[in-house]
Length: 382
Image (cartoon, rainbow, N blue to C red; front, side, top):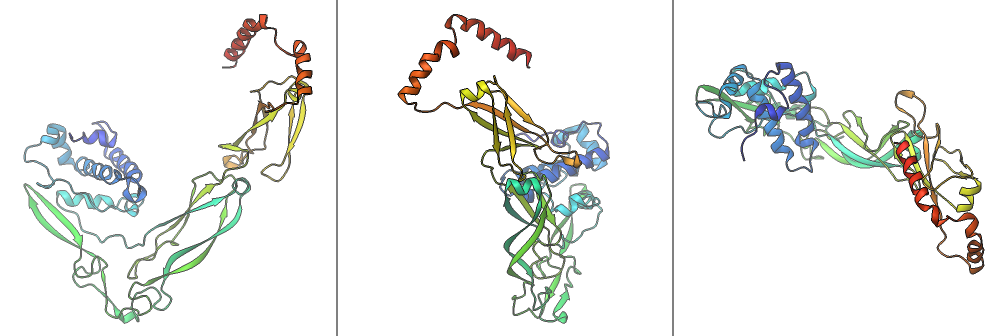
């Protein structure tokens, strides 16, 4: 498979500025980061392709060579015979103040190595709520088995503060760097420190309760508030309520709660509006009727069906939907009228309807004219 053009990968033109390169990279890297797409097997290869494109185009000399020769520049790949292998870029790098630039600068000389993110894993929990809770908001809670810092050692992983030593091999960074020459370039290879396994610390006196992990799993009750009008799939972030680092140190990750809204018995949601179908018999359509139903907000909703209504007509009830964003009132409820046809009719009722067919039925000689009228109405309403 032919390698894609680097500018095409980032969705930019060849006259793009450094700021545009950086902005495009951040946006695409966030979207395609493997941690954000755990169920997508292609995310890692896309993320690596985006990294490679930015690594070349963000370097002035390499961008000049690429603009002249494309992927067939003299001297082969700037990343050596093995090609680009990707770099370890965390969410902190992507949302922070630009720390990833120093990582890419390592490929073309200069730059300094840095330790890996000193932060625990983020946790995602899915929590289902009723449509009433989604509309009105309120406080709720959930229970989950989550890692917390070990109480016995206070999360340090050692039985005493003296049992934690800074790794002498990496000076606490957790990573070691080696420079090697690849053609005319100096490539700096960064890997986890073999002495401390990338932790940056050596535990000489492991805690017996947590066996040196610095954390333990416990059943927790998590209380949080649901904002009124929340959308299905919304993720709520609780800072530093995620996993503590294994082995202690650093800070915990974040806890994300994804809100899933349960289906209602008859409503469908469309943004701040609600949609429903209302079955109505032919006499009610002909003569009109009033229907009262319980509503999500706790107050009954009254639907006035005008006399002479037709199946397929819609009625709109203003201000009875979900809260609109930015406090601009509430959406509407749209009611679709459906003709209710009984499955079985008593013979006496059927005979009465047959007797009335001439009065309430359709004259077959007028069907073509009626079809044309309906077509004109439909086209005028577009």
